[in-house]
Image (cartoon, rainbow, N blue to C red):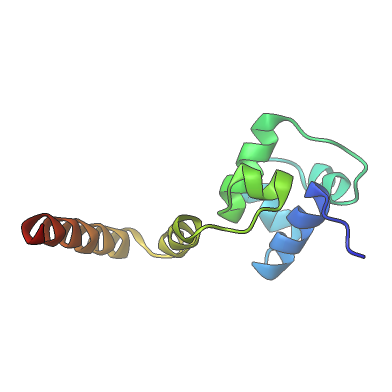
Length: 106
């Protein structure tokens, strides 16, 4: 039976997203040694580090702590983070247009 611990989820997310320990640590602003110790279950982490790891992995803090499945909004946000700035602006315009159209059809 697989452990549903936050350290296991962090390691699993890191691997699924193709990050090395060094790259994720850099994105989260922590040392690679500290990330290794977190993943190994040797060290705990503060809420600040939790937030940084969640942001670097494009997931919610709840997902890391509780393992709840992503909601559709989390999924969409994760996809948008993968786009460049120009593409994100285009998506924003499309979403605003959809909202506008919906208001006219009510």
